[in-house]
Image (cartoon, rainbow, N blue to C red):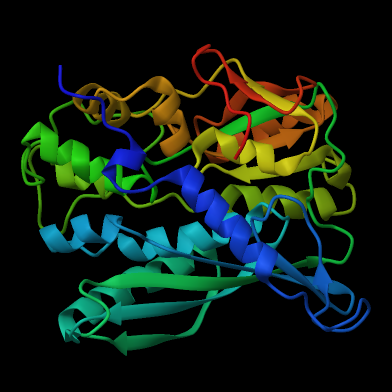
Length: 373
């Protein structure tokens, strides 16, 4: 057996990254705008989006990029899904603070301009914004041959919610039910490790997937003009799922008069991205989370684990493992919410509970425990 791979040895140290981010945040000056003025900061736990006052509303902002998944997309010349990755990483974060996404702007950096590449990105971003129900409000393209060696794509999204209606996690209590929403695959995290595993496997991205890629929770987006067996490249580049439908619709339903669920019943929402299940720890200072009925991971996760000799803990810290979002709701409405979400996104179901265990994430696999994000 070859030495086990992990995210750190592949080039990304999550703990070091966390300390660096904390250092950055600690050195930032707070806004000069006082409370009550437009643009004054609004503190919401979790950090999934930055929030400011805007009269009777609050505006939320999120920014993120596609990361090294772009390297695989560029290698095989297939950029049709990366716009979804970029938009999804931003709007899915806004959802977690209870915001309805409104608009998106992109930033494209290249070593040399290529009209075909830019056209592919434009089509992909437009399709993604339509799915996310947001306005593609503009963007910026930079040609930086002395700085950028490969295509880079990132973006920023703007959303809103009525003042006082943010989803904060502060009202969580022991016994609240966790409902998991299935991912479409790897999404847009952990690709430095994915690329290391592909290199170890000796497989080509053009080869048929070395596992059966079918899974109930997703469809594989085929490359243009391709038929026959699904390739490894098509599996690892499957676009990130955008959760505006149904999660934003659930939030809006809760704010509607005589809606089937009260606003206070939706306690917290977590986007399961980099850091995996440890993202749940961002939502409360004292309570913990127990996943006793996890969603089934897609087949590529088992393949990645086997080829890379990667531990269960490392897999659940690096990847979403089949669950891209978690919603914590009151036990009293959990069955109704589970049914409502399941009708709109098949595979969504109860996966666990909020517990009073000293701020830990625990799992049906006893090796999977997280005490910090």
